[in-house]
Length: 254
Length: 269
Image (cartoon, rainbow over all chains, first blue to last red; front, side, top):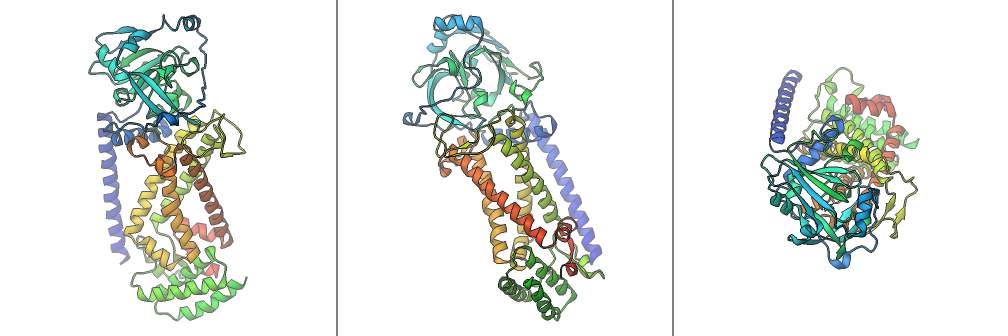
């Protein structure tokens, strides 16, 4: 009896192992093919990043909108952290003129690279949304944001088919990137207005990124340049974000 | 202790029952009573109930996934206690929970204040200010490790529950091995608290809540965070009680049972 049980267990184990192995192989193949592997997939912790990113991309395939709130729910107290006043001299000079000299560079894998002024951005179709900003530290606040959908700017610039990532470079030297799913998402804005007014300097004037389905640190302040790329390799260590080089996951939909 | 004087008496009467396998199973049942409950009345009641259920059961006591050879071997002082799946998932779960608690604390230290409702931050009133040092530099690796171990915990938990249902682990063990208090504790940990941890964790994700506004069930983002914290405390309390009970009923023997699957039942008695 114990012999037959052993044989049965052996066969069960072998079948389970081969099913697991082929399922893992198929999953890896599909993940690579459908862009479900994040730039910071390396190492032990990268296994978790990859599982989370892949699961979210599959679950959010239909691009649902992040929760929106009533204007009455806007927080009176919205903390501003990290850079609250860039040190850059030309930025400070520009502050006095209402950012008349400010330009947003759009380059990389686009057919029409351009430099957009704040006035040009404001002339584009806009979107206003009341959303919750969730900081990775644990605090959260609700505000109303007004800006141009990033997708509009990318279409205007003529984004090319091989594009995979949108990199952002900021006045304070910070940089990060988004995948196309978040770049095309209707709530992803280049925001110039907060709570019905011009975006205040502590919150990233003149333009900040709003990526409502990710944590606060992906919502870059003081954006000054956009570069469309097909890979993350040429930026820093290739992890897709400065934060990722300090251990903060590149994808922060959590 | 009083309880330990009663067991041999009960054992004697049970020993007259039919087979060797039954005896080995019964020994394990009786040993199991010591795990949580030291109260004589509960123990006697549980043993009586177990005898009645056992009489109706054709299933061997040993978990179906485990070989019955240990029960039938000449080594009669050993009894099969935990199946391979239970043992493996138990230790994986222990490691994952340990990593979750460490990394969760690292994340919490970046903002050791709890709120109720949707929003909250420095400058708004806290529900609770936790006596933890403020440390902004540990949440990067902290969050990455938290999610890696959460994935391990969830996948491991799925294996445990699915195979547990298939092999009738819950039905058999809940009916035969444990007292009311143990059954309540174990089943609420597996079927209430751990799922609540996963749900309140998911409710903190701005991406997941775009798909399903589960966060509203908990009363908002900050409420989810607060619930996540308090259920963690319940789980930590469970681990403390669990380890204490294992210690009190023979740490080495029970730990051996969870590693090798067998325990020396006679040693206990």
